[in-house]
Amino acid sequence: MEHREPVCQFKLMASRDALEVIQGKWRIPIIISLTYGRKRFGEIQRDIADISPKMLSQELKSLEVNKIITRTLFDSMPVTVEYSLTPLGMSTKKLLDELLDWGIHFRKEVVGN
Amino acid sequence: MEHREPVCQFKLMASRDALEVIQGKWRIPIIISLTYGRKRFGEIQRDIADISPKMLSQELKSLEVNKIITRTLFDSMPVTVEYSLTPLGMSTKKLLDELLDWGIHFRKEVVGN
DNA sequence: GTAACTAGTTACCAATAGGTAACAACTATA
DNA sequence: TATAGTTGTTACCTATTGGTAACTAGTTAC
Image 1 (cartoon, rainbow over the protein chains, first blue to last red):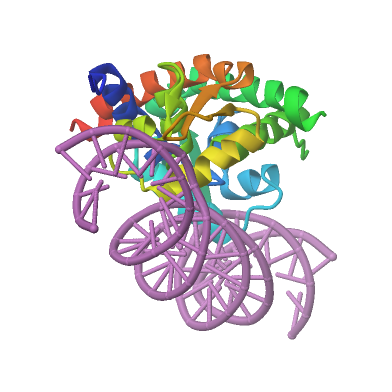
Image 2 (cartoon, rainbow over the protein chains, first blue to last red):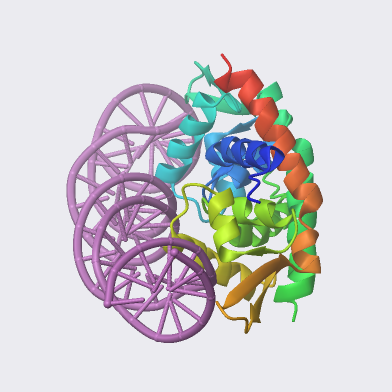
């Protein structure tokens, strides 16, 4: 009588893969900031007003390890560093769009009351 | 020269709203389990093999508070409880689909190497 | 010389998330 | 009477996440 649906198990695995990369308070915001084009450390920090340099540095590293972003160092006179989305990072676009749509919907339905 | 794009700020807010509800190791898996229809406590626990009753109970409560699921108590002889998605819970379908698609894509691209 | 801008690092602490194991109360069945 | 199955709760602990503040190193502008 017990059927552990294999399709359900497959979905649970896929969701874990995705969540491992995306989870946390800052990773999605950083990706969103970079959908507006390559940015420097300080620019991202100004976009996301309340992120500390420690967390930004830490999360940028983890996104780089997971091939979501690339880091490019310019040997200019004050050293500048640019971060940008990889193709894999850009492939989160549809996911981000749905996340934002749902966030707006949720606010209307629940927070708005 | 500094322009903090208002569209970007709006998206950052929307993503925070969504993440607050969805975040954590277990909430998405629980919602996925319930997309297969109303289920009892023990059924969800068997779907998500490694969740403890403590975490399941805790996360079900938080999903209920956020109007994602409903809890229905049946006064049957061994007490049974059924959990099911609300319309708001079902409205995560497109988001979940994109999350799963991306999880599969990510595994192919990175984990698979 | 001093301040400010570049991009971070480091040490320390607090809060939260999650894990483990035992237990509760009730019913049905052997 | 004992066991198993219902849905959880409770206490305790660890690990992860996140926050704060100070600091580094190099260059440029005042």
